[in-house]
Amino acid sequence: MSQRVGIIGFGQTYHRSRRDDVNGVELINEAVRAALEDAELTIDDIDAVVIGNMDHFEAVNYVDTWSVDGSGAWMKPLIKLTTGGTTGSTLGIAGYHHTASELFDVVLVIGWEKNSESDTTGAIITCSDPIFDRFSFSGALPGLAVEASTYMKRYGITEEDAALVTVRDREHGANNPYAQLQKPVTVEEVMQSPMLSWPVKLLDICPRSDGAAAVIFAGEQKAKKLSPRPAWVLSTAVRHSHSYFGDINYEEIHTMQEAVKELYKNVGIKEPLKELDVVELYQPYSFAGLKWIEAMGLCKPGESPRLLRDKVTHMDGELPFNPSGGVICTNCIGATGLLRIGEAALQVMGRAPGRQVPDVNLALSTGFGGAYWTDLMLLGSRPW
Amino acid sequence: MSVHLEENIFYDGRIRMPYKWAVGKTGSFFLTQLRDHARIWGSRCPDCEMVFMPPRKNCPRCLVTDTTWVELPPRGVLETFTVVHFNEPSLQPMKPPYIYGIVKLDGADTGLTHLVNEIEPDSLWPGMRMEAVFKKANQRRGEITDLLYFRPEGGARQ
Image (cartoon, rainbow over the protein chains, first blue to last red):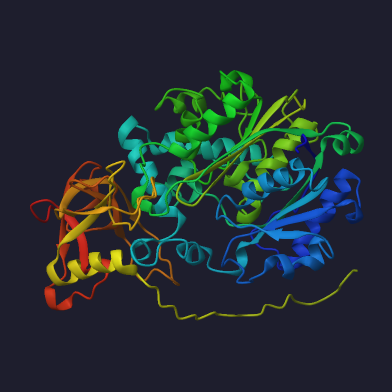
């Protein structure tokens, strides 16, 4: 019992550092209505709802129940999922599983966050083990900086190399009316921004956003009937690792290496740089735009700065990354992974005005979270 | 529904929740040995032979529970580090700047996240030899911070 699945609708809010004009439930509703409108459906067409956000960010338990007034899940099957940074990609993959199982035919998936409502770094610290890890943990920033410092030492990577990634994504973000940060920056501005956790500076890291995203998945027959050009789910891959931060081998990103190996094998990709058409990378900080694309097999370890300097991953390059501006421009965490999926779907459907990559057949979206976990979803213009 | 108003209202809240986390027998052995003798123990998996620090009751990879104790020296290698320059007001009382590092003790296969001190950040490098500095015996309380921090092997560097 299983069916092929396509994405037939995507909606998102205009992401901002704060949305004081709406509460969380109202914010969720904006994305839900946008997705239904995009798919030309009504809430009556939805068979089940999957929703998620970060633990402790808004301090509301049972978010599934609390948000029903905005999500449209009244009298429908509903589940909440939360897996830290990977929440959004987990949600998308769960929506795919719900639909592929044939138990549901049209599934609405919602990710959201109101980062402005709490001390989110404090909230993230609660993800660390309270006995052994928490006393020294100061949130996502130092957790990423320890990866950057190892990578720099091993391959002679510079802070200026990483700044090129921020500059690229901020340039792309200027094309996306939904992005929180739409103003391009220079390498000099990145280098002169305040040092937060050496070698990571303010402009190397993602912002904190208020925003929501909603994606509608449909089974093969429904998708063909309801959408002129669905974005078909071709493959997913998920790798989680340890929870103690000392257990991670920071010289690699093992989860990404293993996840891409499975995904490329599933669909027969041998040369990802040539075969993929666009990537929406869950890239929480600039250095990931170097090291992780090496783990994706786009070049040899330590050689990624050349791809950035040659603009291979820019909009007009061989494999554009983050046409939306990515996580460097917008980071409403529970929605962030789902935004990668939604933006990748828009690219396949040919409906990303201002940021459309021409002739997209294969679009890869990724999720990242926890102690260096990786989720992948590959979307394509043909179901097989 | 359109609304005309003069201001957006905010509702301030704060949740103070006390917790009491059980460390378990395995972690309790580790912490009492640290408190009473300033000795550090890891766990070795009989199947994959990996030595985990902090110790685990079961091997995280193989899930077998007949792990054995391995005493580890208070010395090892700095795997990576960062210098934290920002202040986190709610849950992290440490005052910046401070060095957050991961030290793999000799004989262990995993690192311990901890603090590094008695050295200027510019003089630190991944791969540097480190040694543990413990609190005085009468100040140790059976917490991971009974190990105060790591410093370069052989003492302070300037």
